[in-house]
Amino acid sequence: MEIKVLGPGCAKCAKTEKLVQEVLQETGVDANVEKVSDLMQIASYGVFGTPSVIVDGEVKCTGKVPKKEDVLAWIKKG
Image (cartoon, rainbow, N blue to C red; front, side):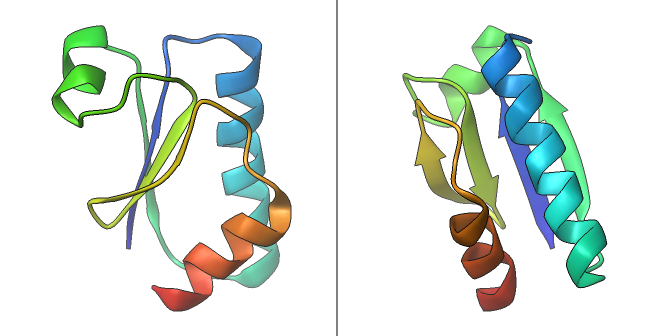
């Protein structure tokens, strides 16, 4: 599973990345988490708000910190 957290490094972006890591640790799911902070690379995903979360190439969340339940659902579907 590939998870990308997109954001320039703001507090909400850091909170999102931490949340994703916590959920992975709690569930024992093995996933590669990548933090993408380059604005051109973020734009290449077609998102216009950060933080954004992409799971296996699919945009799951844009412009807000996701809820823990949402992250759990994305990971379980993967």
